Image (cartoon, rainbow, N blue to C red; front, side, top):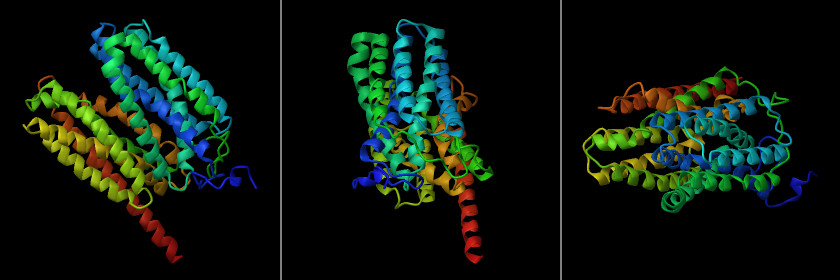
Length: 398
């Protein structure tokens, strides 16, 4: 009997490889939380740097985009090429490097800041790869993806509150870099409790490898669907202004939305294994279209905030269901191993595409782009599901 099988309190039953103990599974999720925690505070950090005239407005967008891209590339390359072995050592080294890069921004300006944040995406992506490797091998991957998103969003929310009400007002941008570095340093200890290795995916000896054609289509659908939300979200404050609302309303909408995201990811975790992923996508599409319609109108502040709250809830609710969608399209789970990288790539591409459809006088083009991307992504996801159903019917008739 293998060592993990001696425990009766397994937290994660793996579909591929040995089951994990609660500590091992928690540590794997914890590394993903460390990797993603920057997402909740990066706007505040970069905004503080702009206030101190250390980073331009263009530099804010460039820095955020490049960090997301390097994180996506690192996750994708690691998933495709690296064998899931020596994970504790990899996690410890990546955590140390990430914390060092967070501290390295102290005192830097424009190009230095951009370079450091771009480099930070590499260890962030590697840490996320370890988490994703555990999730895609589990029997109910959407449940553990939900746990990851719920945990990471909660951590982001708490750190963002600390940044807003204590760190930045008292210590400025450099203080926020110190706080960020301290928040990622625990990854060193967390990595020590991770599984040492995971079983190879079917047909893979090293990394997951390149997904088959249908898996690649599922990843493309992930990018298109996810980019839709990112394209709109980046213009929330200008959309509020065009609705005749103040910046305070937009900021309030953001904070309230963060709380709703925690609830959305918790709901996804609770419903995992009970709700079909296609139903979740249809529900999310309908809610987002209604939210964006509200954004296009002259509405009172409470309606704008309420709409963004609903949008935030479904944006985190749907994220875990991207994993079973890719697994159905590609049962080898090679595409699922690349899902996190695809989502990160979409978070960078959405704002970039939206920038081509907006002007200083009117940003409603982002809503039209988001709608087109959302519907296109939904059509591809529905098409993949119909193909999977056809394959199942053909297999039953043989």
